[in-house]
Image 1 (cartoon, rainbow, N blue to C red):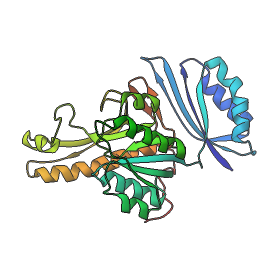
Image 2 (image 1 turned 90 degrees about the vertical axis):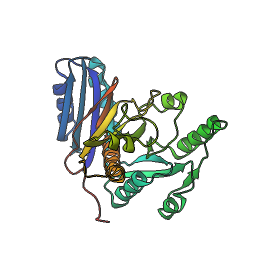
Image 3 (image 1 turned 120 degrees about the horizontal axis):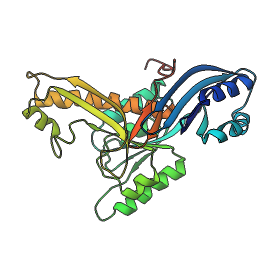
Image 4 (image 1 turned 45 degrees about the vertical axis):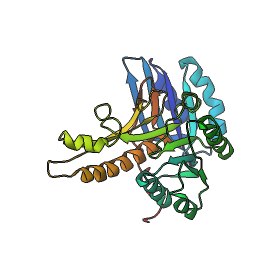
Length: 294
């Protein structure tokens, strides 16, 4: 049986859930997981439904038939084949912890994606990436060549058909134009000390202030630097006994796990943009399972 998902965003009103459930039943589909949210402040309704086609209904047939159901509710909707792998470009600079974590999860099948390219402004991780049989592109970025560098980046995205860019500690600011062009399709990770500790050595600044929680934030990239809609966050406790280097190491671990969870939410179509915020539904049963141990 084929497994699909339906994602819906629309104005909140009566009858949406009934219409969707009724349609799927009529099409011979069995719902295996469902999540919904009514945002009372914005009046928006969000829903994600996983289901199996028990009568051989195809994605194309479901899409064609659902249009008539969606129209009265002004739905922004999409069907997804849950077996399909999203094409992803990873970008990295000189900190490799997030890249290594993503590569490991990809290798064991815990992140079911196709990594179609890794782009860096340095050569540090060329051998690592090539050894994984993934194309590596070194695109140097300076103040003088930034437009040309971003044009090369977009060439890679378009040539590979990439649907998502993951900034795995890529230490270059993307232009407003690129952020708009890829809106909702670029995910970033950074420490959660902003805006308190900016600039160089934020962990050292946090140590000097006696911070007791270290965190990380993963968000969609917008023209407002590090202020895009948040997808995932987490923290780890520290004490007076930790050193500045401990802070860095603990921060590195939480950054890697938070970014991986944000990517997982996006590729499984669980994250919805909701103005300056997101709606992120829980993972469906089995979606964290990996194909192998290592």
